[in-house]
Image 1 (cartoon, rainbow, N blue to C red):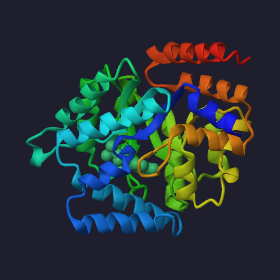
Image 2: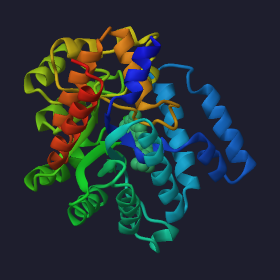
Image 3: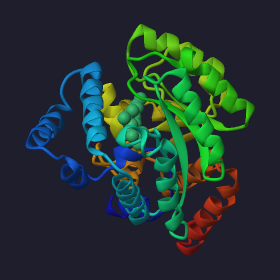
Length: 338
Ligand code: 5GP
């Protein structure tokens, strides 16, 4: 078991679903919380998170995000979070990471959203020789069409390092239909898209799943709750899925990983990637997420290697596929794996 664990740690890894601020180290989050009241709120939310059904866990999770958002107040904070996130991924042997974040301004607009994006991109650039990182800009489900359009414009402006557009935020807000024009424009300019889908077990959410699948984004996130028909459509269309074991387990309220939909899609040879979602808030690392999957579904080292290799085909920066595959090949040759 130890040997397999070490293998999961040392294999070059690809992270495709990581919300930048959700990657915040717990120690940093605590330092940024300015008042004792906020610190108490954080502790209570942390303690209560594992309790209740999907809806209450989601509500808890999003309250924590709103607390976090209120205590990130300047560009130095976001530089620090980016810097620490990249350090953490590097120490876990992640070679390529797509981080996603919702652009925001500070000080009532005096510091523009473009400065927020630039601060992240500059920090990423500093690490380019240690980790290849790219940015996906997130549109939040609560945003207006105009705000979403601004995000698309930012993505265009920083196209060299911004590789895609994401839809995330509170899944109780069903807004894909309203925001679709922005995603249609993204397609027109060949900007890749990834959309959170099927995060709640309610009828409205299942209805929205159909609209999202009709749109056919480049990748889909989670897909926890779905109908048989939706499952078949995604399988048939071969839309790659970003699966986040710890996060999915918590929000789906599953007792153990053996019931996770990884099994079904893996058996169908569906394009898949294993990711962390919010490594800081979920207290997880990519290697441990992968280890849990490998252990639960009894993948061999060879199968894991092949799995990671196929993941490299779904990265948004197509220029870096060869880089990822070469790193993986070198790794297997060094270990004389096969
Ligand atoms: P940020 O965009 O501020 O860098 O990252 C945090 C944000 O990502 C949260 O406020 C939330 O909107 C979004 N997010 C993080 N995890 C999830 C998730 O599992 N599902 C959804 N729908 N949104 C998430």
